[in-house]
Image 1 (tube, rainbow, N blue to C red):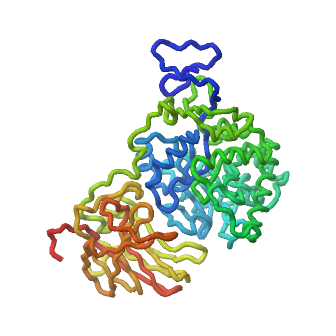
Image 2: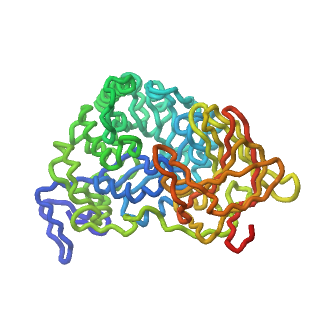
Length: 556
C-alpha cells in the first residue's frame, strides 16, 4: 500500500516503492482500518484535563475516530482547538437534548442539556443548538433506569419526531438514548439515525425490526457498559445481590437483541459508553468487539461494525475501509482479527492521517503529555451583568448548577434592572430540593466552555456586591479535576460590598470519593461561582453585581 500525505494512494500485491519514500516493513502483522467508537464520554465529572490522556489511550488501542456525548455546545469550539494541538482521534461532538428531569437533564443545566417537552420546544432547541455547528444531537428519549433505580421522564413521540425533523433540516444527525422496545419503536418512527444503547426490557419483536429497517435506524448496543462485571469493576462483594442479578438478566436480553437485529439486517455499530464506570477509554472499544462476537456476530462482522459500518452511520465516508482515496487511519496488529477479534488487543503501530502515532517510530506533539492547556491571564472585570446576551463581561456563557436527581433544586437566574439606580444585576431565586446537601449556584466561566484554565496569580482576590436571604452562601473558585475553594459570607436584604482575598478561600473535599481538600492553585481556575443552600425544601434568593478581581495595591 502506498500512502501519500494523509490519503491512501494505491493498494495492490505488487506495488514498487517510489524513490525516497519511507518503507514500513510489517511482515507477520495484519493491517486494518482505524476503529470508530460511536459512543464515548471524554470528560465526565468536569475533568477537561483528561483530554490528552484520553486521546493517547484511544490511539494506543487503534481507535482513530470517536463521538463525544458529554460536552456542552459552548465547549465544542475550544475542545476542537485543543484537539488540533494533539495527536488525537477525530472527535465528533454531540449536543444534548432531554426532557425536564429526564436522563441527562437530572444533573445538568440547559447550557449542557436542553430541556424540551413539546414539538415547538424541540424545534426551538434544535435551532439554538445548530448555531454551535454540532456534529450530531443526542436525544435522551427513554427514562427507564434498567429496573435498578427510580425512572426518569421520557420524551413523547411528537416531540421526538419534531426534534429529528428539525435536526435533519439543519443537516444534523440524531442519536438517541433509548433502552426499551416501545420507545425504540417511537425512535425508529421518528427517523432517529442511531439508537445508541441496547434495548433491554424485553426481546425485540418483528414490528421493531421492520421499523428500524424501514427508517434506516442503526443500533449501537454499548454492551461494554452493560456487562454485569465490567472491565474496570472490582469483583462483586455479593455475587447474588439483586442489582447484579438484574444486570445479568438485562445483559442476556442485550446479547439476544443484538443477534436478532443483526441477523435481520439492521446496521450494528461499535458504541461503548466509554468514560462511564467500568468502561476505560480504548480498552472498552476492543472489549465491545469481543462482546459483539459473543452476541453472535462473526469476528469479521464485528470488525466491520467498528470500521465501514460505523463510518457510514456517522456520515464519514472517507474512512473505515482500506482503498485508494481513503484517509490513512491505519492499524497494524499482531494476529488475524477477522478470525479472532482478541488480536485487536495486540496493536503494534497506528497511523493517523498517514503519520505514525503509536509504534517504534511514533511522533506525538509535546501537548500529548500535558494535563491541561496553558492558563490565560484575565482582566479585572468578570461580570457587571450589563450584556443582554446571557454572557459575562469576559464573553463566556453564564451557567447554573444545582443538586441533581428526580427531586432536584429548581432555580431561576435572570438579569434584571436595578431598583435603586441605572444598570442591571443578576437575580437568583431557588426552591431547594429535599436533599440534605441541596444547593443552587450561578457559575461565571473564566474561559469559554470552562475548558482551559485561567491564572488568578496576578490578582489579590475577588470583590463583588450582593444582597439576599439564604441560610448559607459561599463564593467559590472551581478548578480542574473537581478542585474547589470556597469562602462563606453573610447576606442581608440590603446591598453590601465584599472584598475577599485568596487567602480567605479554603479547599473543599472532592465532589465524589475521599481525599483531602486541595491546596490553593491560582493557575487552575475555571469558574467563579456563587452557591446558596438552606433547609431541605426551603427557599433562598440573592442578587449579585460587579464581580471583579482586585490587585494587591487596592485597600480592603
